[in-house]
Image 1 (cartoon, rainbow, N blue to C red):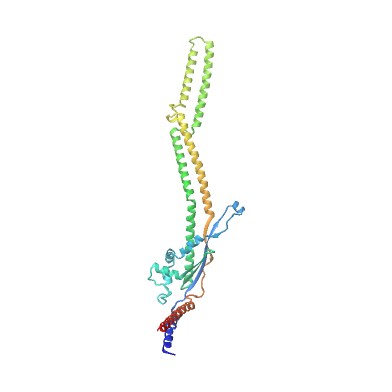
Image 2 (image 1 turned 90 degrees about the vertical axis):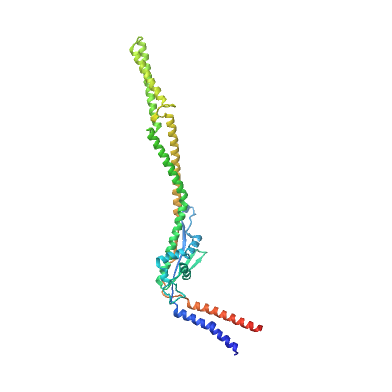
Length: 367
């Protein structure tokens, strides 16, 4: 062997063998065991159809919503979720359990929330199947119980987030119907208040009934007038001129006629009815209020039916988080994956060393 061969062998020992021995020493002696907890879930969307739709064969079975799953995927990797779980479980203490003995795989407790989020991306792996909409999480921690707690916390927070989205969608679906119902209630309330004010001012519950009473009074007076006229004719046939009975009958007729005229003037313009107003004005105002109240009641019934239908439709459509894998409890440590890490490190070290040797020989041959 020539000197350059001894140099290449020495470089192999320094660039490949020595680093691999150091990495192996760290992985098997220094690195702290980590335990994994797996949880799998998906967003399910249920649409309960009416019995008639089910009989017609158009009932829709439960399925998953890809957009909701995409939102959930981003949420699991978000700083918001990390902050919530850190506040509930103290993630900094959990991930810094092996600090400073294992500075590579443990979390530095002096780090910021951004550092914790970066470590979260290493400790929590999210696997998303876009075809089925299934999410599977692998959560690492230094004890199996803490790994399971973190996985359960992720599932619980994700479930609350999906429930919040479902509530927002339900409120959006019923907001327009609720606004229409509120307007209809306000309109009906206003018309009823106006009707009450009219009745208090005129002291008439129903002008139609009051007019019928007035007409009954007029009919009675007209009947009495007819009787008085007949009585006057009979007296004139038997009595002499200047008979007191004739004067008395004529006076009675004049009083009845005057009363009839007074009662009839109440129905005309300028007449004095209840509240100092003529019946024509009172009836016109009452009919206007009655029509407005009728339309307000019809609008209220229609708005109430629309709102009930919107609420029922929103309640038939619900989304929830379904777990197909509950958070598991590990019995042995599987991480860090020492052989895989050592193999990958050896591959790159060998590749860099071989590339350096080839560059050396290429430069040497050019000379």
